[in-house]
Length: 216
Image (cartoon, rainbow, N blue to C red; front, side, top):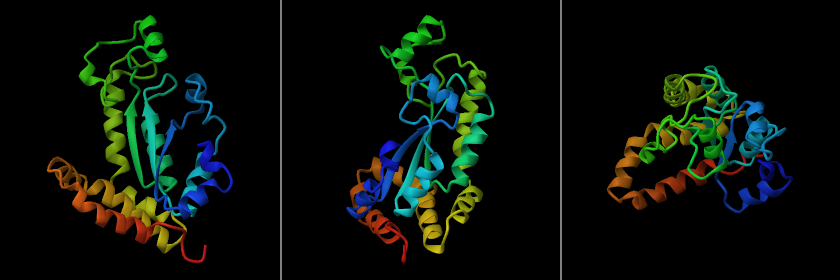
């Protein structure tokens, strides 16, 4: 987050060809950031970071984590609403997962909150600990609902409408729809080991819609 807001650095990266950036926003709840010592994000203006990336013609792939101790059942809708309002093109959501031998694991184990050790489920898509602010079912259901809601056509269109001009709106639609709505096609290409053949099309799309808008 700090590097995104550093004057000049992002623009130089965009001029060098940067077209998409994975940004770990983690959570829209500042209390979670302080509790988990995510100092690099505390006090940062998330909205300003998104605007700077978009002004530079860079697609935002945002990452959020659910199930932190300060999260309640409303965290899913609040996160999706914020991301759509900012015009974020793609988002990945995760359930907080305490990996073995980490500080988080040791803390939750000491609190008797680890529910099992089936390592196949430690994939950030399943609940493997007892959350504080909601039930495990609420957490897992909310996680899947966030994906569905963020990638609804209505929200893709709403995110595009939040962009300042036609160039940015087309960019949003090209990225958001191409990334997620055609995900089964991408999965098929990956499984069939033919994704390399699709790379030129992807690169042309990024080149056509990336970069700063005309006159900016």
